[in-house]
Image 1 (cartoon, rainbow, N blue to C red):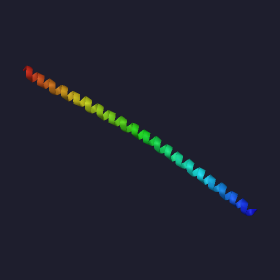
Image 2 (cartoon, rainbow, N blue to C red; image 1 turned 90 degrees about the vertical axis):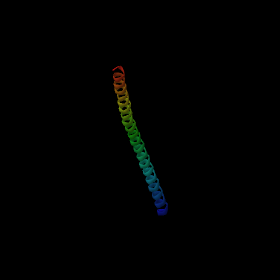
Image 3 (cartoon, helix red, strand yellow; image 1 turned 180 degrees about the horizontal axis):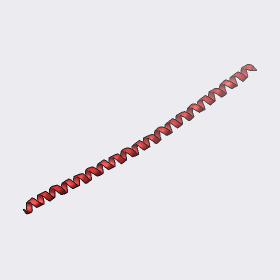
Image 4 (spheres, helix red, strand yellow; image 1 turned 45 degrees about the vertical axis):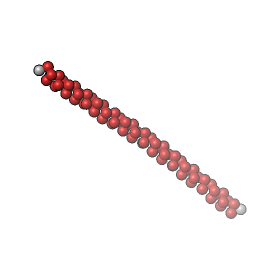
Length: 75
């Protein structure tokens, strides 16, 4: 009888440990995915700002160059 109780206790403990490990792993994966999504969103945000600055800056530079060229052409 004691052997049966011992086996049942061991099985219950093993099952509980497995369930806890699975919960921890799933929680870790969820945290990693959430952090990855946040980082990706931040990278996209920063890249968008950089692209906007480069495009606007490049457009302004082209306008400045064309303005100078046109002024020189008219002169």
